[in-house]
Amino acid sequence: MPAEAERRRSWFWPIVNWAVIVVVLWAVRRTLVGAWRELGQAEWRWAPEWLGVAAVAYLAGLIPAGFFWYLTLRRLGQKVPLLPTFRAYLAGTVGKYIPGKFMVIILRTAFLCGEGISPAMGFAGVLYETLTMMSVGAFWGGCFLLWHGRVLGLERVYLLVAAGMFLAATLTTFPPFFRALMKTVLKGVAGMDPVKLSECLSQIKLKLVVAGWLLMSVVWIFWGASLVAVLAASGQVELDWAKDLPTAVAATALATVVGFAAVAVPGGLGVREAALAAILVPVLADRTAHPNLLAIVSAGLLRIIWAVVEVLLFVISAIMTRSGLMSPPQRPASR
Image (tube, rainbow, N blue to C red; front, top):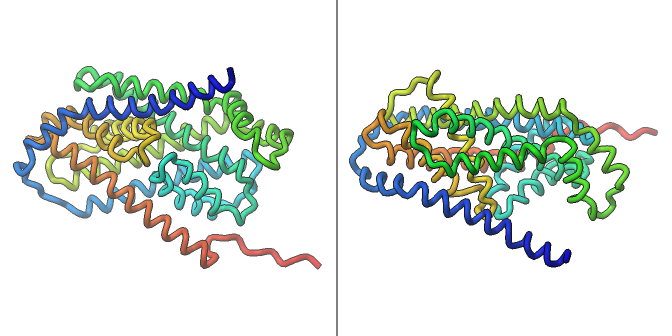
């Protein structure tokens, strides 16, 4: 029976992943066809400085996320210093482009290996930070769809994915569930003392959940601002930041959650862009003559800008690690 259950689980998640991919691509088909028809008709008036703003906004959003990871590690009993933890967090963002997304955990833990971090607790910290980010993103994306989805004619599949991810992520980040999950996942880790594990996980409490929701909401605000900046760079639409920022926050969050749900695709590459483009089209429909093309181009540019920032952060972090920068000074040995 255990072997049969294991076989069922091995089939279930790949089916879910590919189902998400197929449904999203099906939902975006009209956007792709419309963009192809509009190709060559749009008159672009590029303002490149806004692309720089988009990059800075994305980087700014990583800071509260990194700080939440630091808080989580400290709660898990890891006495890691602040700046090296930020360095490890920023360096690890590029790892999501490796299939399976486990490279994020490996990179962040590796960059902190000199700070005495436990690999098991590093894994738990990354998982908790990621699930909290997806939970908050799914919440804001779901609110957007419930409020505007029917008016804009958005596909219901996005609401279903957002609702599913919100329930899954929120339940697993609720302290009792997360403690049980980590005890199961880390049970067979070599050298892991069950008593010490329970003691560390017991520090994941409601205060950390509240801090995570506040910090991750700030993350999504910055990342929504990054999308607005990309739209501003195109010169195709007149933007009202007070009105467009909340929509961009929800659209970016929802598309990222959909991309994350497609675990089989490294970094949700293509899936996130398809979802974001499909969400943007009805938002832009009455504001530009080429909504499909603008949606596709904006979603693609946003990915490129974020990926460039992530690669640069990894390179800079690697250089700092090799040169010993951002590491706490070594204490002299006691005599």
